[in-house]
Image 1 (cartoon, rainbow, N blue to C red):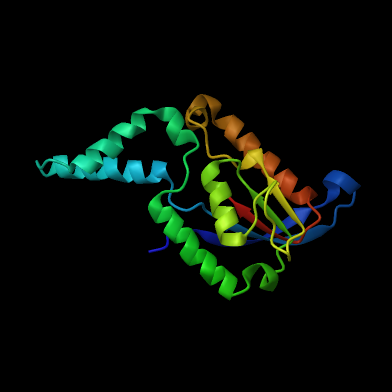
Image 2 (cartoon, one colour):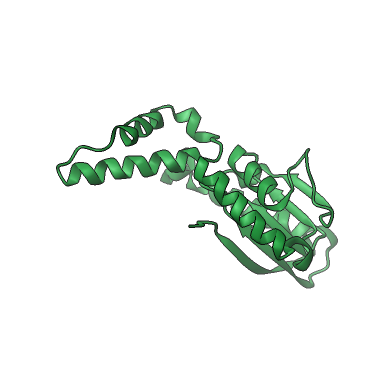
Length: 186
């Protein structure tokens, strides 16, 4: 089963930030969630362990092993896609190619997170990776630091405002882009 989140937003943008013009323009933004990552796989294993323990049963050794890998926090921060994620990318990539998605949706800008799982998803599904590959119909491919996942620090109430500032910065960035149809992979 494919767990991709593909959301289409029609975003009204006030263009006054750069030009002084206060006209409203609309952009179509396609939000694509990365394929299953190794981190997602390990967290699912941990969930299965707790579920089994709740039933007073022993979890599988593979779930225990995968769960213990979560202790290596740095390996979770920038993990690649899992084997399931590779299949998800191939399946969804084939569907998007068959539908000629980039051309049909007139996507001219693809931006992705610098995290490996987002780069792999963008390249595999859309044929676009910053400093690498670019689909013929796309004008620009960017790696955007603003798209990294919420940091552990940003989950805390004391630093939540920094996450909100990052969202506002992304909205500003979006408004500054000349393209009307944009795909975002994060």
